[in-house]
Length: 130
Image (cartoon, rainbow, N blue to C red; front, side, top):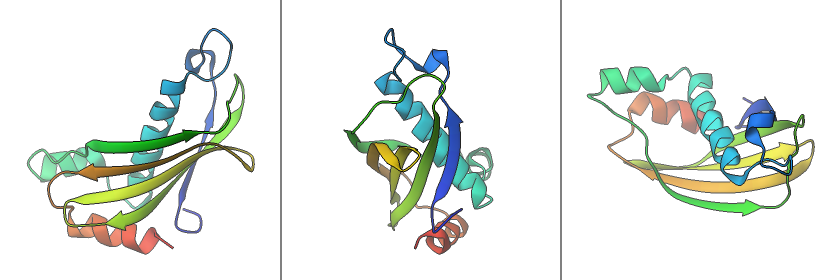
């Protein structure tokens, strides 16, 4: 965690690209999913534990707003930056960026809605937010 955000480094592999050797747009969604999972791990919450301990609790992406600003290519090292923005009763909003160095390639804001977010997770992510 850095300044209220989790940063996950990811290298672009051939399997992440399309025929032009640029990252296929859907691959960014996979990168950001990993970023969200690692954010939870960074605050010592495992999604598998939430699912097991809370009668099948699972997070669902309800809404995504994505701004594709640039493209990554094979062998680039990217930083997936995930930051909690808003916590509500049964939803949270996260902001994510895919960066190559200082350049923002993809910016996304996503909202989720499910059952009430556990208090421990809410407290951990609220502390992480700036």
